[in-house]
Length: 435
Ligand code: XLS
Ligand code: NI
Ligand code: NI
Image (tube, rainbow, N blue to C red; front, side):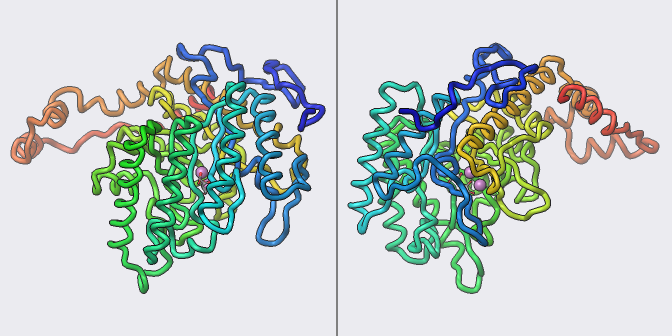
């Protein structure tokens, strides 16, 4: 019996379709820049928002109506697995992502918790034998339980460090078992509230030690997934150590971990850091560190991680521009780390929301592909930086110039002529490709 009754397989019906349960732009087999759209986008469902979240907020309980409600403990966990595979298949989404605690309830000891996990992981493995759906990434929830009040790998309590290590050890074994293509670290409470009681140097050193242990254990058991770090500037910690892409890259390089990690960039985390999504993707890309994305959007009128489904076509186009320039995301993908609004409480809204996100990304991909094929922004850059391709500019970039030669070149010249950046004209041109 189906869980999501009355909803069939979501089909591509094209732009003219008025069917809310159909794709208007996402056409998995359509070739964009030589690759199937499905292979370019590698969409994933975030288990926590879609099968666990119920729409509670600090002022009220959940509002969501879900077919799996009414069960508890492992039974509830099993019903969610059952629903999840039906959901992926009806939407034609090739991947999913989860935290360990999303999929199975905690027991009284870590040993019991692991036993619960084994039951559900076994069940997922069975489903995955007959389904084409794969695990894009898994991660460990080291922020919900009160034991993580001071952090996990950056806790002031060494026993918590040990607990977190054991948890990630198990999570890597889970990744190996289910064939996850990446393993994510999002530093939920890896940060601090006040320097008055924080040994920042010890905490950062410990975080690096922890990540090294994870890499070593992965090598030991033969886990081949790509390690990813997901930067976020704040929430729940006031100062989060993985503030943004640049901070995280500097941390990884400082501790010699940059060859084993890439970044998972989330749109709403970028905006919380005071950046655009494309800024964070760009910083990651030019450093060879762009691994995967958490696709969502924030609300500039609210100061927190609202995790809305991505529908802002302009932003998504610029994001896809970076991803296409990166030649795709490799083993990464587009994970909808997004939740339906509290007022969208029907199970059907889960479908509408994912369709909205998938169609927006499909359109963004097509627009980005055209921008790249027609070299629109490449040309802008070529013209703007033309002075570095000959004469004194070429001497600078080829390493031939020094302060003395540059002084000699410029000292008797008259006032310098600059060229307009023509930003408004470029933005207007961009609109022609987006809309
Ligand atoms: C929270 C994060 C989280 C990670 C996975 O803000 O986005 O959901 O993606 O732990
Ligand atoms: Ni995320
Ligand atoms: Ni987030």
